[in-house]
Length: 159
Image 1 (cartoon, rainbow, N blue to C red):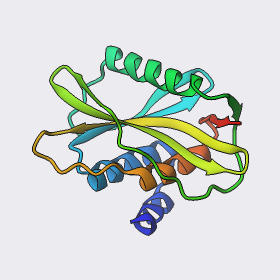
Image 2 (image 1 turned 60 degrees about the horizontal axis):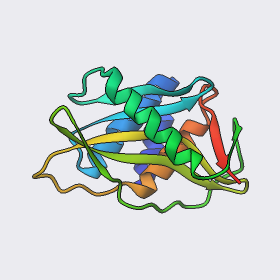
Image 3 (image 1 turned 90 degrees about the vertical axis):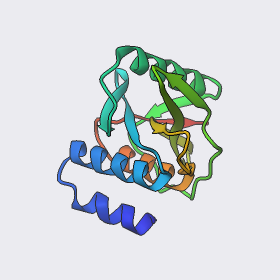
Image 4 (image 1 turned 180 degrees about the horizontal axis):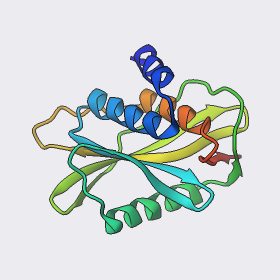
């Protein structure tokens, strides 16, 4: 799965194409029906890509930004644009959130590095009640590392 992800990333010509393709793969591999990818930049969390039936929704984007900020405030974070190569990341199942009839799972995008845990953004994955959802911990770490290579994404490191 990670080699397929790497192949997808290598074929992309721009950060926008890379964000969309990576999110599409994350949605497919997890069993979600749609998703939104948020990347952390100089001005905070921004919507980088959306896949499937997910409308622009300032309330949902605001909720995602508040959740991201809250998660990061629980640990000491320092900003940097890049870091050393990561080690494999593991994660826990995301909590579910309902918004306007859709059920979302939050996936924090982080990877291990010599400086600590680097966090680059988050994804909201839309899940159906009848779907077999698989939390994409390893893929989320790979996506975080991919985002960290984008000059418009700011990686936050826990010390």
